[in-house]
Length: 125
Image 1 (cartoon, rainbow, N blue to C red):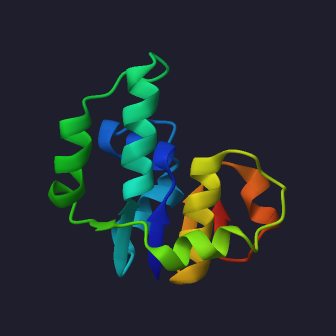
Image 2: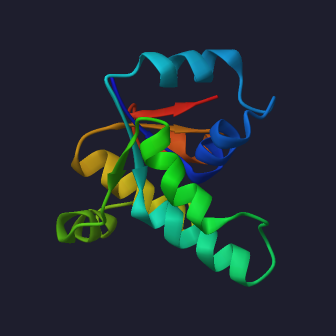
């Protein structure tokens, strides 16, 4: 299985947080490929800059390679997919991750149950 991690799942992974369930951890460890979207890096940089998130951006970037993950850039076809999404969810970063998952296709691993309304590709923990 190929996974795209939602931003908070990636942060929990890097922090070895108990908020990340063992089942999700195992899914990540056994995945064929795990992707981190450049949109997640953008989201964390913005939220860090306005004081909503306390992260070291350089560690987030280096954590992708150190974890054996791959960065998924935002491509033009991902932006086109945004236009096809219903308005179940308003967060622009989550919508981009969903558009990427649907375009590639990848399974999106998230704790946000609203995203499951869009596709069977969304796995909620």
